[in-house]
Length: 196
View 1 (cartoon, helix red, strand yellow):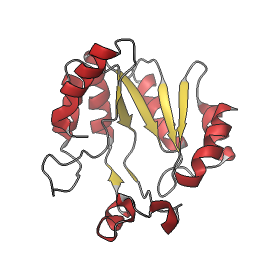
View 2 (cartoon, one colour):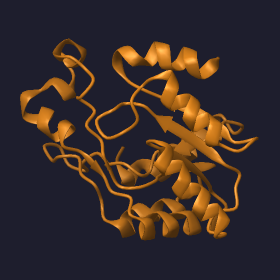
View 3 (tube, rainbow, N blue to C red):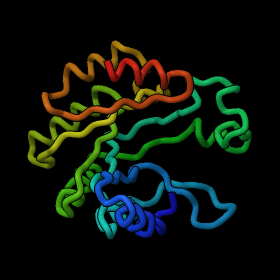
View 4 (cartoon, one colour):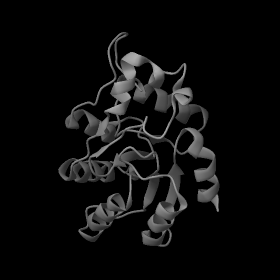
């Protein structure tokens, strides 16, 4: 996910599949521009540049509330064998990831996306994330439509179970669009629960 490639990739997809909804995952780390460099979180100003992409995407993900993102916590060694998460020199990087999304950044990101005609697609790590979005809506920072992704990968995000998902769904307003996300062995049961 090289930031320098976003415009070219979006333009290519738009030209070939104009009716496809394009969502850019813009609130997480970006791939390095040079071989041998590490992926890293970019500055807040650089992350805000996603509101200036051309052609513009339909949606950009917006993380809500700074949180730990330990994507190794609910998986075993076999789950990561042969992929980057399992490489000894990268394992702790994945284990110690933090998603930066302080209130000032999130609100400014939403304002810039809205001004550019790009829909915010909120990444919700638990009920607290939804409550923050709800307060942004009540204050007029965001005016909808409400699209949220419930992230159940533990390690700082919600635990992948039907009780946490049901609580999240109970709180969400009618007509909100909610998708679910998990990883490794939780993907199948969480997707089935989400569809039900």
